[in-house]
Image 1 (cartoon, rainbow, N blue to C red):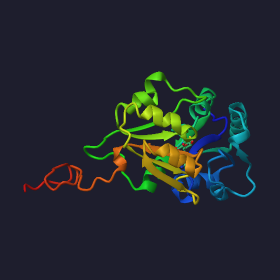
Image 2 (spheres, protein in one colour):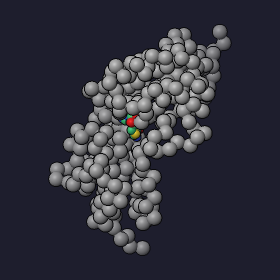
Image 3 (cartoon, rainbow, N blue to C red):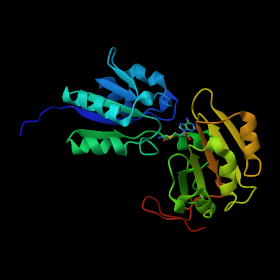
Image 4 (cartoon, helix red, strand yellow):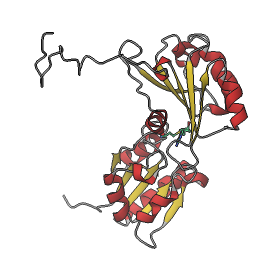
Amino acid sequence: MVERNKGQVIFVGAGPGDPELLTLKGKRVLETADRVIYAGSLVNPVILNYCREGIPLYDSAGLTLEDTLRIMIEGVEHGETVVRLHTGDPSVYGAIQEQMEPLEQRGISYSVIPGVSSVFAAAASVKREFTLPEVSQTVILTRLAGRTPVPEKESLAELAKHQASMAIFLSVQDMSRVVQELLTGYAPETPVAVVYRASWEDEQKVIGTLATIEEKVKQAGIRKQAQILVGDFLNSHQGLRSKLYDPEFSHEYRLGQKS
Ligand code: SAH
């Protein structure tokens, strides 16, 4: 069978902001791209410098899904490699499914290169581990319902009942609702960290508890582009240790010693 063309679309996670948090693979693909569609509101434009000079660059901020698909398909029909740059990791609130399915239906080949999500940049910024033994072994990634609805069984109030480690996207503009819903499950003294533009030069951090965070975020003037991290994992837990590195614990690569 003769291939009609060799065009393809590659979805790339641009990382949370710091250009050095783009993967090596993402960088390599950008260097070979024939056209790039990027999410201008959150992708650091510095990484577009990896692109060859003169290739068309489209900011998706002003585009509809239909516009984006048209630009992609046009490139693919010319045999081009089209890169679609998404902030953080594309699989989290990236709206990539609605792009991939029409490509699939047209038999266009596409692939996805993961990226560092802002949730991990935020955890790095506050120097904490989400999954602490005896504290929480679960991370919930979620958001408040906004213009995009959230299924009722996943409301913040419902999820809060687990008292797991939680990262809330797309919600800092409504801290009062976030706090109100979280208080259904977590205690008022539960620590909260709000990280604005994690890994960017103008990153800002606000640390508090469910009782104090709303006022602190207001004082700091943070209204968008922030991660809200919630849970006891944010406390310092000196002395807690994992099984994996316990001298008495045996596993595939190490025989434990009896004390
Ligand atoms: N796919 C992205 C999320 C896109 S949704 C990712 O993996 O990070 C956009 C939301 O992500 C923002 O409203 C904010 O909640 C969060 N976000 C994106 N970049 C951020 C950053 N650098 N610091 C903190 N939050 C960020």
